[in-house]
Image 1 (cartoon, rainbow, N blue to C red):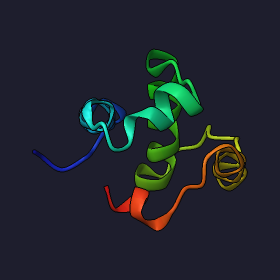
Image 2: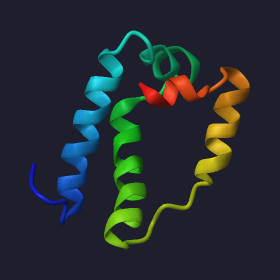
Image 3: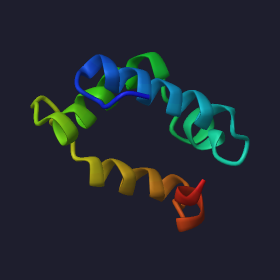
Image 4: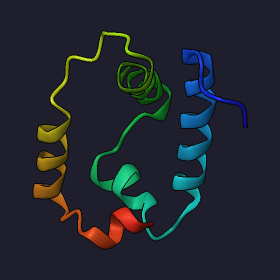
Length: 84
């Protein structure tokens, strides 16, 4: 893969990451059953977040920490999950 230079590059990376993640039976249930994300709506938000982090753009306004704390209340996000 080439260096990430644009939001389109980020979209390709994030999309591939989530394709693999959603195929993994050890973790996909968090996204399909616990959080019930709609990936087609979630991907653009993720790209905005990573674009802000990596490319220095703006636009992500959510509290990422609080989102994960809320998920953890539904299903504990253990260190083992993040290793996957």
